[in-house]
Image 1 (cartoon, rainbow, N blue to C red):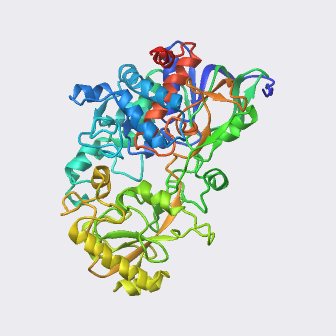
Image 2 (image 1 turned 180 degrees about the horizontal axis):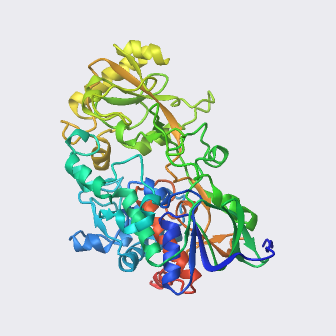
Image 3 (image 1 turned 180 degrees about the vertical axis):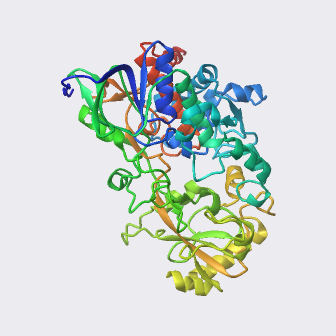
Length: 563
């Protein structure tokens, strides 16, 4: 264990949380509720982290809110589902730990901070119904609208998101026809909520935890960078931070929690840990792997899960608040009718209506030619799609900005302009049109996933929400760029069931904890399920806070004793 004690301490608390998303705030709140002081450090100018940038989904099987709604489910069923998705890459004990403690953490924060979540009705798991243990509804939860004025002076220092209409809940979006039917949304309701600053989705979820910290008078230090962990030769006992251009030495009597999300804005780490080539990112610049920089000198062990790229699009002129280009995830667009994704041969290569299918296929390697046959790739749409559906930040029918898309009067002309095999693209479009008219895609089973129909399709389109012909010019091609996973990255710090970081000897590093996307995904394995990231952050923070307070949960051990 490293020893790098400072000459003097500038301040002293019991627990320091590095990062102000759900994981860091949950840990600080839990520790404080158990009699120990906490402090939250946030490098950015706003609180909320990647939690606030998310859709705010919290996926917890066997939760009590579903039971109250008359939906039968259990943590065991959810564990069976996650174990199948893990494909052998996960750790059974870690998965069981999350399954057991997710519902417990939910109840705790409902009582402790007034967290108000509701079931997203008629919203199925990713792999329902084909995967054992999957559920038609009940596991997806989301925050009820949060009145941001309750944050007081922190109202405008708590993060919003440029990616989603954060004045709507999922129920509001689905009632208006889904993400595809943006013209059918209740803009009167949206305007009212925005005027009153009633926050939903990720910004709403994050705001509940910020309010919980404020109610406890937990100090929240923004624009403060954790630079170095401090050890005494036996354990981690503090942090050296930078604040207002000066070093700040903070003693942490019970430990430090690293909850800084992933690393995708660090191109070197994205390449070497996730094998992403020239990636872009949809998140803000501080998501750059600080947990590795901090925990590495303490001997922390890392682990990697399968980690496909997302695909993103950028509309010229759209920027983050710091002036960097704003990249949007392509998930809401790829599975729409009148839309396909093709490679340089002009061929489709995956089920566009289920983004995980596309993303894993993008990085396929042809060992004979030493190429990625499916990258570069393009989203191809026609005039019908532009008339009916949004595209990036453009509303239906709105002109696309210069440089965003390549436009042509025919499929062959479009292929020539983007360097795609013209004969291949024409054959692909002709075949896809036949599938669309029949309402079935025998090649890739597009349109067979209930989740894909709801999230990436048009439920008003018949006979299949995800299938529609490309038959009306002009035609458009939009280049898709490899992108990180919105803070959800494949490599993280390995931890035990109390969220203590493990060293390369597989023993806990005393005084060092990890939560959320900074932790290796041994509790999920190969395939992610949306909503798990926020559930993990909340649960990890709860477990870390309990252990740091000397009250570690024994629920996993008790479950393991049951024959």
